[in-house]
Image 1 (cartoon, rainbow, N blue to C red):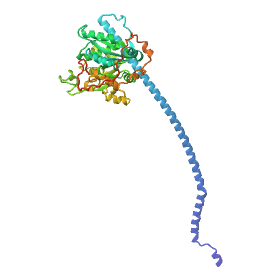
Image 2: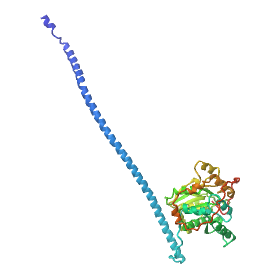
Image 3: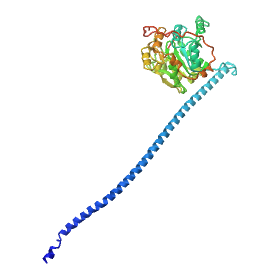
Image 4: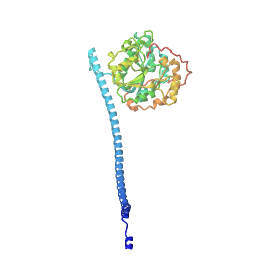
Length: 438
């Protein structure tokens, strides 16, 4: 009996064993089943990574294709924009030519002349026509220009034929018919053949009218992309000017120069008095933006507009203000080109050494090169672009202008000395020729 009772397990141990075996079962289960679940998770994770990789590759491929499509679209947009610009220019020119034809017909009808009369010679093609504003008393200035930046003789003809660049001194006539001034100019013209004679009476207060007449005369004689006015005491680099204008050739209506906005001078005792100052608002106001008068360029459309509307274009006291006023209500792009108003050395010289050759150089204090007859050679030596820059400017094919230009050959002229003279002392505030105004 005693041995049998010793072989029995006490009742109090039963719960303890139950708990022990319960935890033992949990450990056993985790040991054999967790790896299976973990393997399933790894397989699932690997599968998800593969799917993500495939999707990512598809996205990358789609992005590349989309990028290529975007580039193609941008190229097409650019081509379309260029075509629209060209079409806009063509339409604008057709409208101008139509208006010009109507104007001629109306004028012929008003004058009682026959509209079907024989037309004059066809206009010559050109890239740009440059009118150098000059006066009867400025013979020395003209000679100084001929000796520096303006080609002479056969070179002038070659410049027109090969590059489409026409350069002329523009001048009208005196108030007295066949005066000594006119005869002296006739003699100079027969020698150099570099004048554009205008149907205009020369005078200090007639510069706005002279500007209108120049553009109208130039448009009637040459079919050019650009028309430029420059004073005869300004140094110009023709090659740099041509290259600059060529960048704007596709634009239909451009007005290029050094844009400014000076004060409206109401006082009668000042040089640039504006009699119609009251039209510009309160005293002390400024003019609207316009190109300074020493040099500026306008496109064919604008020159044609001036030619057609000459009688109704209002003239203010200052020529540059008048030109700006004629364009203020039109769809015109104003281009502020600061290389068209460089100072004389050292300003233009430093810029040339830095590779930024100036288009035009002059002294603001004199509204031109101070003592230009004595100093323009010095400016040309220090700031000139060199003959290579002009003749290497490939604007258009030679044959294009050879077929249009039928002028007789000009006499060979000495292009002038290129050696620099000693610079004259710059006189601040030097008075300009009475026939010049900016």
